[in-house]
Image (cartoon, rainbow, N blue to C red; front, side, top):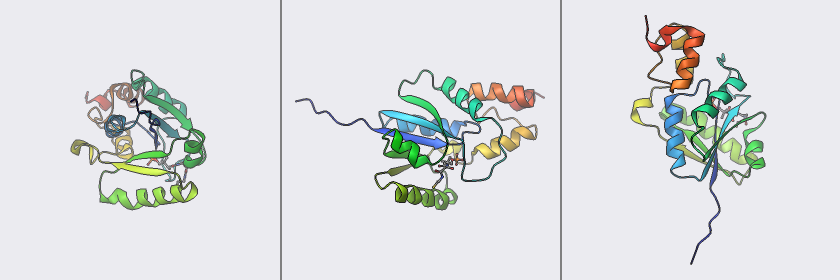
Length: 173
Ligand code: PNS
């Protein structure tokens, strides 16, 4: 007997400014447990940030990086995350948790989102140990100050960072 089950569709939201190898690690882990993953680039972030790439550039870099992954769809959204998730009938949200310090903010967002849409569930995933110290905001700062970010971002993102900050971004002095 064939058992038909509903497709598991999840949203992996974030600013992705820029996409890091930590995000990439979470995306590959999520793909092992869901059928389709909507990587959702937020126009509005809850935390104030000094941005690096425009929304269009972030979407473009993600789309090109995951062009070979049919289960990944890269989209941008504005406004509330729950409204976007509901519009796509995606009842799962994936977020990466690096350390206890992430927990309070993440837990608060998860509960607020579920209070706004009770059908929602949030899955926290731990990245590989190699990436527990990594954050997009530190990558932005290191690149702005002339540091080598080649070990922290995927190749297409590095290419764009070299265009923006010069060869020092890939470690060339
Ligand atoms: O990568 P980030 O910046 O940590 O991602 C945060 C993000 C984009 C997931 C969060 O700021 C968000 O959900 N923004 C959309 C606006 C929204 O729904 N705000 C209410 C959150 S409870």
